[in-house]
Image 1 (cartoon, rainbow, N blue to C red):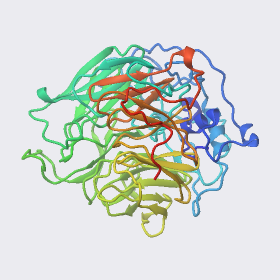
Image 2 (tube, rainbow, N blue to C red):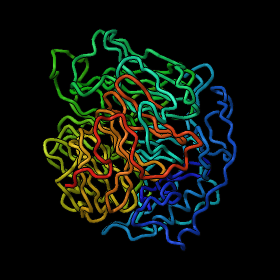
Image 3 (cartoon, rainbow, N blue to C red):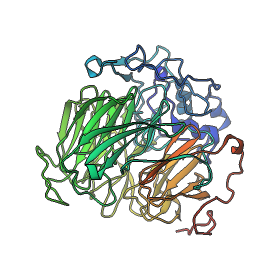
Image 4 (spheres, rainbow, N blue to C red):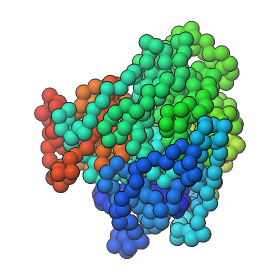
Length: 576
């Protein structure tokens, strides 16, 4: 079962997406539930949820109601935090990685409240766990902290609730093309490679209009795709020149309660209300080199951002006023946008999004950079541990599970490191459990499903690894070039390439491709999932992909519908 356990709080009703999703659908993991473990898992019966949004600033508008459930846009059964905690306990009843002894500690959840009159009435609230806690967790657990602690957030940050690509989804579509299983398709203004984030019936994403030198936040209605807000957040004299594969709107927003946090690299960072009001905005001067890329992560009221650039402009002669440190990590106060702490780090330029985890009761923010990965204390910015490597221009976000953190080291030749995050100081020579050098992605993040770790290389080779040992179960060439990170939804693994082709795989120690689906356009943004739908962003449109309710019993594994001109069977890519 999925070992990426989340820090759960009963009152926030956050669901450990990857764990119970695998339990419910039986995706073929080698560590699926035994009948004995199954008895420890309780799934709540479906209940109707109100989708009405409370008025901003109204009492309780951002404080989770203990009676609330996660409310996708469709009929996915709600699951309580108690159920999730039991599922985690069952799923993690296997032996920890060698040398690991971390134990999960349940912590208070936090929420952000936004006043009706704007930021002057904003306040932070903190909630403590209820007196009755879930059963004790077995030793050997490292938990991946959900960045957003809100009852109804469905896809609130880059790579979903746990930041690792696991979706709470039922009946996610298997097949689609331009004429099939497209609930709606809407054009998007400008260009951006940020992934959609979704909650409370709204889809948020960012975009840059190069001709106007403007940076925008877009909000769409989840049911219809109708544009609700187009908010110009920044207008610049010039945006500057960046890498041809990048955009000026690549970092993915973060949703927390009634707020949407957006980041555009050195162009600026802002917080908006979900009614479209700009609450605060600020600029962090640095040379973001290839352009904005690393997405922010929200931990303990701090918006933590990795800013790993150069000390000068590379593509043009643009000068960034106030730029002093080439590489640093900064924490902004989520309420005001002021700097809480800033830690310089020496290395090389990098673009990876940090991941918040919990180890032995302590929260760590694991942030890969050029030359080394560092775990920070989110309260102070103090370094907890670091691991050195030869690499720069990192893009993949780390994933964690089985007492390990998995990090890809970037260009020129990437290495995959499995690190035990229990040490202090430089742990390079003492805490690397295993490493691999073949088939490691430069752009797409890994995904951990049960005992298996999956990667997709930039050249389209999918690899399934034993997460504990690094043994390769299989490699399979899917073809195409890949930048987007894979997604697990409804027991299916979705792998999107750069030209609109999505391969749908069955997770497991034997390779099996279920479908190959083709849409038009350039596709570098990672997929998002909400309810029964998959959301795919191209260079020009946003798609909602969903099977009609009448076709939910379609036979899995049948040949995929596609508007591709290729007649190759989707289940027979060339094996490596």
